[in-house]
Image (cartoon, rainbow, N blue to C red; front, side, top):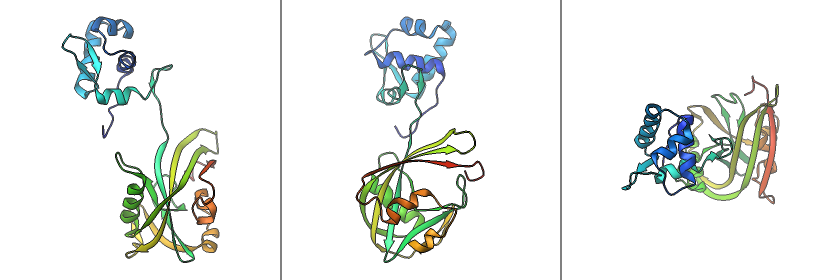
Length: 232
């Protein structure tokens, strides 16, 4: 399923019950929600409409393939859809003694410098995502190799609230070809030496991963970073 539909709490209850059964009758599901018949009919109709459930030949209800995928994200203790970390790529491209970085010119993190990257799209491999993001944002192509995982929790410096939970797959890029696109919507690119990069105050801490060489000997790094509301 390429996208998800936000659903009502009562609909989450119905999906949770069907998660643990091949199928279930109307009366059983209505009793679990505690709703009056008219209200329950509305929620059953909605789940049928979005394709999360279907009616069997025997008149019961069961999860569709899309419904199984969606219902599997339910926290069955709290009856809510669990929030999950964002999955993205970071591309560490070296060209001689310089590394490719970009200034972010959109929110959040407006004005921060870091490696290019972006979200992994549904159905993409990690290296496909890295190649697409690299070409879209920089105009370059390169030989790509998987380096490891960087997991980052972003917290508010004011109240310790979690602002973001991100899992980055670090991809090394070598032998670039093409003409570097300096400006793009939401940022600008530059090839800087590690010394030049070190002098920039407003940069992501992920630029310190093996001082710009990728993860190197480590295959997994996990950090918690704090940002003020103005930085975020």
